[in-house]
Image 1 (cartoon, rainbow, N blue to C red):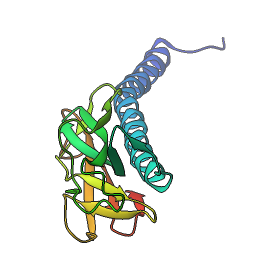
Image 2: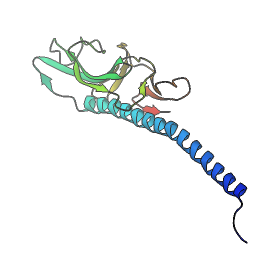
Image 3: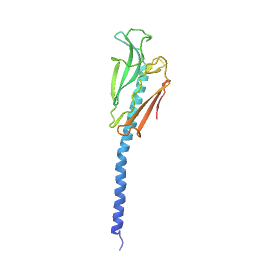
Length: 174
């Protein structure tokens, strides 16, 4: 007679069960890594949005001059897209402090991916038109770089990605 013995059938079922268990366990990590990649891409896209808005800035509103756009850390799950305003009306933006102040919010952005948060607080990043020149944390001169890290909430030591914003405007994802 041809066929499988009971032992062969049990071993086959055990192997299939183990493979299924490993697949299901890896699915959670894969889902978290996908969410982390999406969140990092979204933050980098919002930084590029601020950069592009600074390039296109020529508008004035209610006596204030828009002197660039930037990103401000608000909390582990939120950051703010802001415009640095010169309330004195100086078209050359000589009296701006190159960092976020209350009332300069354009949009508050929440990280929408589940289990993802900003790993570290980061300095204000401001893109000053027309080039745009990059200022970090209100520095009076362009700054070399700042790093923004995002991570999976319960695995911040091992599962994170970084965005580096350079003083020349380059934005790298690592």
